Amino acid sequence: FDLGTASTLELTNDFTVSFWINETVGSGARGIIVCGDYNNNGQGWKIQRTSDNKIGFNCAFRTALSTTLINTGDWFHVLATYEHNTGTNRRLRVYINGVLEGTSTGVPFNTTYTGTIYKQIGYPYNTTGNEFTGKLDEVSAWDTLLSAPAITELYTNGPIDLNTNTGNYTSSSNLVAWYRMGEEGTFSSGTWTLTDQGTGGNNATSANMEEADRKSDTP
Image (tube, rainbow, N blue to C red):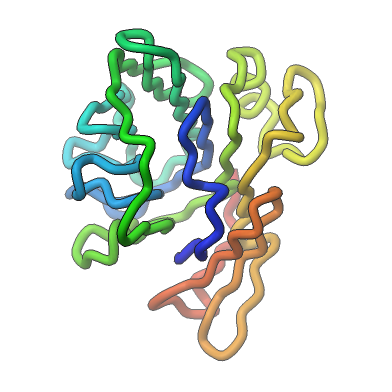
């Protein structure tokens, strides 16, 4: 999916990205979501399934890596945070099913988005051969750090309505992108369109997908 040109995903301070994943192909590195051009001096950020079946959250050539193996056929909740402090206090974190599994500190995040800025789900930087194969749900981003109780809320009670504060989740006003995937998708003239349910206005359009690619299986 291409996520349009609006700048709301070009996040430079604290941010959080979350989604549910269920893979059908368990080999090779696979792009899940990107913003920027990571191959151009580490610009922007990306989340991928690594070649050893883990989740990697990358900024500025630093990686927070999960310990859990993302087995095919199972749903996992993935959440990544970037904490924009100074110096060695800048941190990447990756959580699987509500549990913190990987951290990287001292991240020299390049906050300048220049040149070709790719914003994509499942299709890294317009390259072929590393497309995600499987099911994704509730792809979302906030321009703030979600608290540990909120992260637990998203996993244990999710999927939830992210535009409404509930329980320990209190960051609905910071929701800059939310793609419900099948629930809010429309198919016309060979293209799926996903309406951005956040504040960003980055509606997503598909490439190389068919109407039958929407699945009823959800987390």
